[in-house]
Amino acid sequence: MPVFRLPHNRIVFPDPTLAEPDGLLAIGGDLSMERLLLAYSNGIFPWYNEGDPIMWWCPLERFIIRPEKIHISHSLAKYMRKHEVQLIINRDFSDTMHRCRLKREFEEGTWITDDMEKAYAELNRVGYAMAAEVTVDGEIAGGLYGVTLGNCFFGESMYSDAENGSKLTLVLLAQSLQAQGAPMIDCQFHTDFLESMGGEHISYAEYRSMIGGE
Image (cartoon, rainbow, N blue to C red; front, side, top):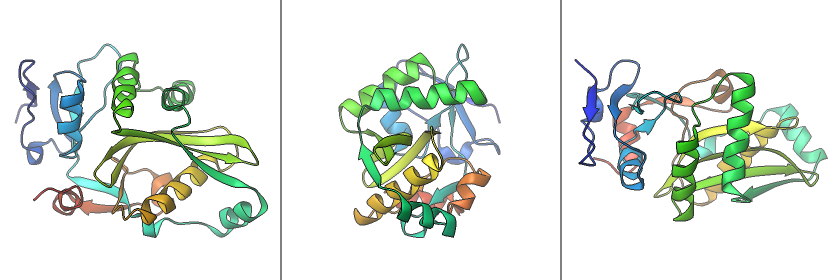
């Protein structure tokens, strides 16, 4: 069926189960706080290139990490014992997000547009988005950012500036979320890296139950 075109005068989304096999659900709309919060509360997220219409995605086979199942390899555990590693939350959200943008632009291209940076900074301002970074021996090694709703974390992007930067950020964030009783880190799409860190596929029905849906 055709991809749903969002009206500009109403904050609505179609039934997420109508998404295309690749996860594409709708196009159009805006990045207002109200629309973003409605989107994430249903497992929908924006992902598009600069200059294109906003594209909204909702893969029905979800890929998540359960915080209690985060995988720490023997080599990473050894590295953590040898160094002073610390998790920092919201050091500077906009800077963390921009570091993610620069890293991806340099390596593979990015969907993190100027409008996205502004929209997620506003979510962070009111407590619906969070940045996490890790320092190793006092120096920033890597970080990530995402949306927080209820006790779930919806990961958006990450960067690494030093050895194990992304892995350490994910591990320490997972441990922090586990202590808070969070059921999952939403990874959106599968990657080999996320699978190596303990990621797994679940059904959309189970996913919805985790974020408070029926």
